[in-house]
Image 1 (cartoon, rainbow, N blue to C red):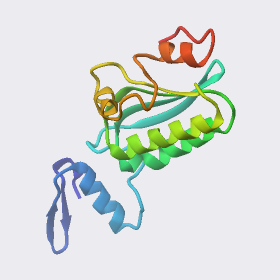
Image 2 (cartoon, rainbow, N blue to C red; image 1 turned 90 degrees about the vertical axis):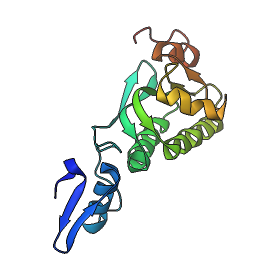
Image 3 (cartoon, rainbow, N blue to C red; image 1 turned 60 degrees about the vertical axis):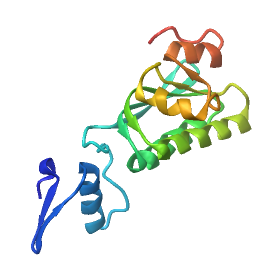
Amino acid sequence: MELGRIQISEAAGVSTFASRHEAVAAVATDVGQDRLPAGLGRGGGTTTIERLQEGPAWIVAMDGEHDVSTVPDLVQELDEAFDGDAPVVVDLSKVEFMDSAILKVLLSARERALGRRKHSFALVAPPGGFPSRVLGHVGALIPTYPNRPAALAVLVPGGSSEG
């Protein structure tokens, strides 16, 4: 097995896949896993989803490439962030790719936040970045800010000025 070439040698021959994501998914299926290993994005680079507290708000910071394979990790981090009554900010500043599965999770999180209270959920997506372009397709459904301090300033009176 050599994922660098996106070919997997099998006893019966060689399987070739269009992307590393497809190759890893095929291997995961063959070994009985229901999703890709954590930390491996669609392009094979490292992905992270980290939850941290900044003042009274929870920040869910995402890095790398995110698709259906990282949805369970994102949902888990959002669930834990929503357990309290604190505002939640999802920081997409370092996201290089996200697909519709991630967008669906973010839209669901927005609905969940509206059920709690208004102004308790926001996204950070710098203008011109990939997440900003994807979010442009859903209009103003999710409050989006160019940086973390701007999001926190709206959600938390006297919010953080760190970036």
